[in-house]
Amino acid sequence: MPPTTVVIFGASGDLTQRKLVPALYNLCRDGLLTEGFALVGFARRPKSDEQFRDELSAGVASFSRAQPIDAADWGAFAANIRYHQSDFDDPQGYAGLKALLDHIDDERGAPSGGNRLFYLATPPDAYPRIVTQHRAGWAGVAGSVSRKALFIIQCSPAAGRGGRKGRMAGSTGQGSAVGSDVRARHGAVSILPPSRP
Image 1 (cartoon, one colour):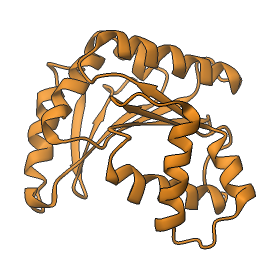
Image 2: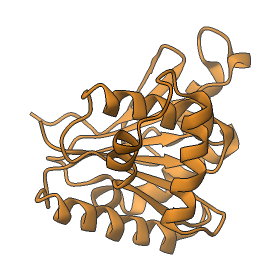
Image 3: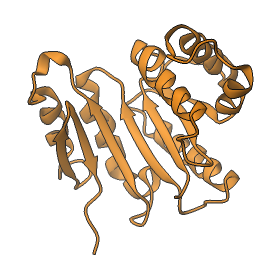
Image 4: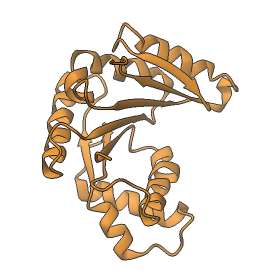
């Protein structure tokens, strides 16, 4: 399987600290992540890769089901974590994200084959802003049509079983933003590139 890069938008928030990264660390510890896996945090606050890793380390130590944290396991996982600072509305920020993702793929020897997953751990009003920014650079930031790319939008519990808020945000992106299919399952909305024969 091609290597996968996960990009978390809103990576400075509690969802990333308490849920997402501890879960990814557990998968890494159990040997369930693809070889060459990488994680990129995208958020507005300025910080270095090392500062971001230190923040995530504290979250994993507090919220991972695997305790105590093994230093070697964390070191192997953290070595593949990067941070990208940008406002959600800044086109140059997405150009910088594309350059970083391409660099990561080159490092892994997968210049055109790495898969990309974008997790929107942001308030609902940021969903259409982020997806719209990908419209201009879909083939760049998300990847070529041969690359698998997936958007996951986390629905608020207040949205109910049907994920109404998520569907509303997803429909903003459908057609108008990336010309994508929108699928609502298990309280999340996945925005997928159009199918190819």
